[in-house]
Image (cartoon, rainbow, N blue to C red):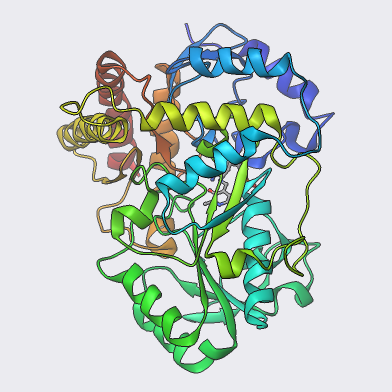
Length: 441
Ligand code: KE4
């Protein structure tokens, strides 16, 4: 019997200690009608809460756990590393090793700087782009999330393109006045902005495959248009691949779509579950970063040896080629994801529930929507109550998804065919519950 008694008690206590009882808002299960399961441990594709419930985990810590939880090789490497200390605040060989590994996979990156979170990576990349161009304005797209640095916490304007007004108290107009927000996937809107203001725009930052409005893919030609527009005006094109990196394909969205950005932000998988993120790109841009250049950026725990170790072993695992005739790691993940999505689509159809199922490599998501979802507006038009009903039914059946329509789900190398079959089987009841709700609403 599914019960969350201990999590309920733990959550009540946590709410007196941390805002909303959590250290990141999405974890609070707000509006889901359940307390968030407090996790005791995880292994492979499974995650276990303090009430003893076992779940098949498609959150994977919001992306990092691409090889599954507590992978023996990652654990062994960390045991070995921790015996040599946890942090030195000094250069180490493992930082160079991880840098080289990332640059092997991302040829657009000539030089890279390690930081501790995706927020730090995007915030720093934008500062460097401004320092490199001498310009102040930046463009971001509505529905894309790049972390919580002030200049990026801007709310979507009503028009096609508007100057950012703060989306959070505490963020000043001064820090958002230079942030222009434009609808995602709208080539005309961004073309107009670049024709009118391109010479004053330091950078365009984009999730090349968007994962923070649910999973939304770039339309045919969209990323090429951004590349051409920024080339013309000398604007730095920044791909925020914190989430889609190593997932849309091993080489991220830039490899999947054949685009060479000027800078790339990484996170999540690059740390294998420990706090690592990074930003990198063209040498002429990255050499502007202190101490080689004047743009300041620093961090006590940047390049932490334990975190570097977890990231390096994870990347080694996903780039290993067991044999030439076997599909590589990413290809296997893509095929597993496809099999799951086809099963969910089939069950939704049988239940008479209209969904949009999106996939980008090992990232996937569904919208309860009869129409195409291609930007924030169309994502937000999806049936949120239907999502809540689906989410709760799956959770009760031991399937662990993100508690929000605006999140993306993730496959790992640890998910088995049995996991996928069980997930598809559980969706029968979940879609039937949605169908009953939609029939009576
Ligand atoms: P962090 O600062 O949370 O490490 O990374 C920020 C970030 C930057 N860029 C992209 C594309 C991201 O998806 C993220 C963070 N992703 C969210 C998931 N929607 C992290 C989960 C959370 O906020 O707790």
